Length: 430
Ligand code: AMP
Ligand code: GLY
Image 1 (cartoon, rainbow, N blue to C red):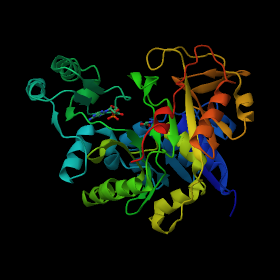
Image 2 (tube, helix red, strand yellow):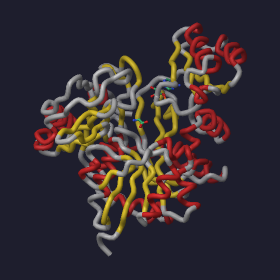
Image 3 (tube, protein in one colour):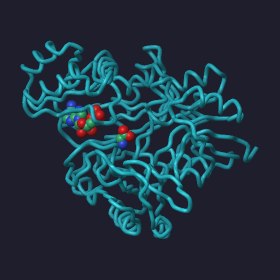
């Protein structure tokens, strides 16, 4: 039956706008709710003023509105167990359980899991005691990587060039608790080199379906300089990553991760997104995420050619293996427009103009990350504000188109990287 389903999307960023945009194209959708949503999602459905982490309010809303399917997209509600709570209440929900989401919410859990199951990752040790950690670091080669174990908005990873820097990072996390509980356990690991890519796979717990490769640009500054951000732009597929490499990644990393999670009694259902480094020694896991990436998703939703609800339904009943998921053979580039000052302090409430003109550029879609309606105006409401995506036959063309659209958009303090995709275009194939 067409137009029957009520969908609730938890979250309010560019990822949620992009998934909502794709869900809205499904013939089976009657209405989409976003909790809390943003200025862009308001155009696709109804924003509900409930925080993504307010699980009891989300549950109450889903029951009251007879929601048919809830998509849990951000990391925090997954780590808090939103999927377990919805299931307990007999509601249909898609995402990783609290146990499975530990792959992302605890780096110590993820690293121990990889060690136990012989999955390729950087060599490491975990610590809760400052003196023991310091003694270990003193004998470690440089650079050495110190990571807060818990969720830290991408800020809990310190690449230390000297031993003193490493002691300071350890002291900040374990003694001064600058990351709160997230830093009460640390992972100290070897420094890896090689290009970094994002890999996504749908999983129903038994079967997986790989996405094309993508690449994020995590630093704020051009040439990968400056502070880490949530991600400043993505491309897909990555021109230097061969089909053979993706098959190898599926065989050596994705499939064994999923069967190991099942063997450990926490089948992984939802979206598995490892960040990988393609080292001279093969692909290695830098981190696992238990959700769609942002801004990877703003690129992926435009390449996905199959009804996303069909994929999610198959994943909920465990029949992903029988589904042929189609991807456009085009290339996509997504450029993030951020507030001045991001990823440090920034102001909100700046009036945004030019989105309509940008979307008049053929093959461009602008997704909203941190925006809201303020009377007749659309204003900035976050660090990452908009994601400008363009699709084309080649990556070069997609990038030119995306940057042409970016130039139509304005808000006070707007900043973006002008080199998205540049290093990928110049790189030899692996
Ligand atoms: P994570 O939050 O674990 O993804 O780390 C953030 C960023 O730090 C990654 O995207 C990498 O660029 C870098 N990084 C993390 N771990 C390592 C490592 N072992 N060697 C080199 N770079 C790393
Ligand atoms: N773009 C990286 C992430 O979503 O973690």
